[in-house]
Length: 385
Image 1: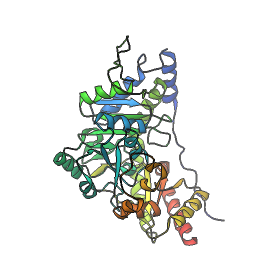
Image 2: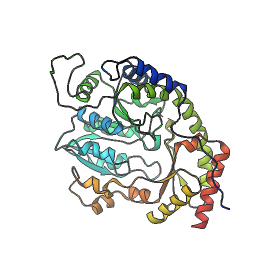
Image 3: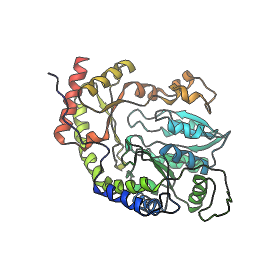
Image 4: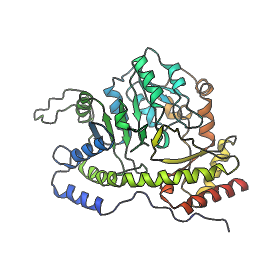
């Protein structure tokens, strides 16, 4: 009988901290942020944890990106440079504002946006550059910060995978640019849905606050809406859960940081398997996904391998599809290029989206023996394919 994986830790995780927070939110009698205390408290704690003076909690990670882009001046007719290999919310946040999303290639080893490819696409309409910290590994912020300074185009970090990450000792909020986070059910901390934006400048935060609350100031009683906006406000119940989730995040990161080197070394021993390479400048990686490639296989075979891994008890997934190979990318705000035009200048993305597999981060909360099980099952599946 084929080996099956033992049970990995469940996700999401919760205990009495979430229960007590929810009861407090319930009994305080005000369930939205304007009357309660949980959202305000969470924002302070989240900002401090990430080395930022300002954090704004919002409804979800996609809205976090959309709001941050709007604060940076992204509007119809502008362009936003995004990695071609990412979850499609990265591009859709810009496209929903009427901007054009310009995909660029990623590094073949780290899967993060390639600064050289970014430099090649900066033009007169470029209003923002959006690195995505893939699987929790911070992109090359040194090179990107220089590009931003030289071009005058601001960065927005898509940190949906990067809660608690550090780049050369600096936290996400200490890197000098706006950052957007997600608290969707699978993320490193979660309330089912939710998001946050950290800002390096108070003025940006105040603008974002207005726009996330229909353009209405905190103390307004006469409907004096100062800007356009929408209702992106987080509720008190979600904030109470996120405060508890934030409290256990450091220990979980410690565990995943300890398990990934073990798993990565085991994966490297399997012929044809190449784990995601970690940039040495990333000195705190929360490992949102355990990612590896099987170079040379087709997308169809990769998908079959994922199915076999799932059958054997591993929470395995196919990598994100190249955004320009999704129909939704072309509905609005697409560049004046064909799919094949973009594909020719994104060879690494073309390979990665077809041959990459990822495992849910709860696997890295397992034991060292379970890391061995993962490698044994993968090797067995590949040998039988």
